[in-house]
Image (cartoon, rainbow, N blue to C red; front, side):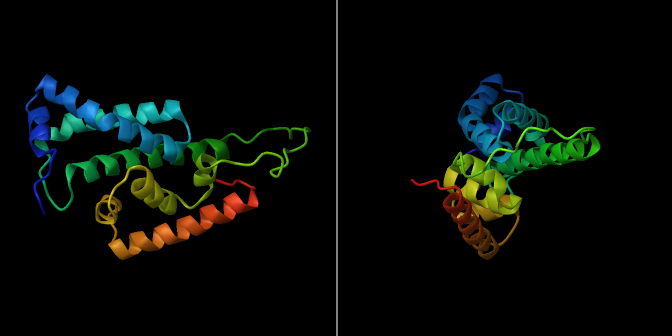
Length: 178
């Protein structure tokens, strides 16, 4: 594996260098926010996840060592894990707080308002969504995305193919055209 472009910067963060922390945040924050926003579909939650991601980096930077994956893959994995923690909590809240009365208002007709790609992403399987976001939005190579997801490149390509098909079906069904 070639040298990690973030290795020296992470070492400086671990040593408590405030300028390194500022540089790392400036370098990584836009991509981390984008990843979290696409995974969660909520900008405010994405900001919380990004903040927690950087807190974890700050806490663990001194012990991080280049291994099987680059630092960029590791930070994406941390962000994805935090997103899944939030998504799990959402499911728990939904099932714990069932409404006492049914809302008598008619349900919106899905055909009346086409859904965009961001909404469609929220409708596909989580692992497919992860793969698509990492490759197409985070612009990772298949090798980097597979390392981030801790799967083989073949498994990643399978997720991408199934995810693209699922998105296409949703977008065609909802009448969304490019």
